Length: 226
Image (cartoon, rainbow, N blue to C red; front, side, top):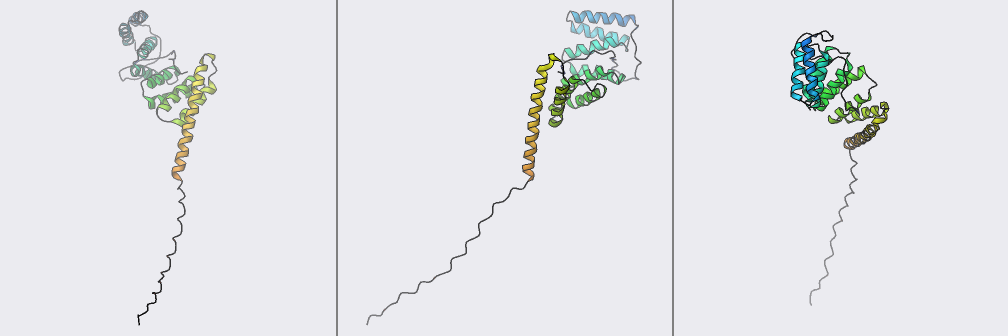
């Protein structure tokens, strides 16, 4: 249904431009402590406290993947989709083979209304995970938002083809209906374009009637009175 974030085994946050960092677990006690404080704050719905603690953990260890994951999810779940995309973009660029970071990036971009970027990221994700139905649903929604009706219909169809989870049958039905509507729209637009390109046959003009010949009546005979 394309309504979820994927858990990631590798999400790296590096807000400042710098060379890529090597992957690895955190061994920094200060980073670990900050992450634990962030988790505790998140558990009691202290969003500001959790965000601050997760950022501190990442500052202490920029390779601390779990802290970056937690921060990205926190930002996403508080509707800060562009900020979440920043986190996931760095993660995806850090390890191009890390599919879940790429998916979360695409999803965050779509939720932020950044549809051209979302399309690109969904397509890159599908190169890594071509059998994931959720990505096709998200891609189709992004394409639909951009007016890419033919492509969106095809990707909704692909979602229907791939989605086998019983819990997602409602989304299968929605995708089927969306695909059918888009296909009708595409067909109607093609027919209208065809009509516009075909000159209309002009009705034959009736032949002009020949002018009636001029007639002169003979002058009446006159008689002169004797």
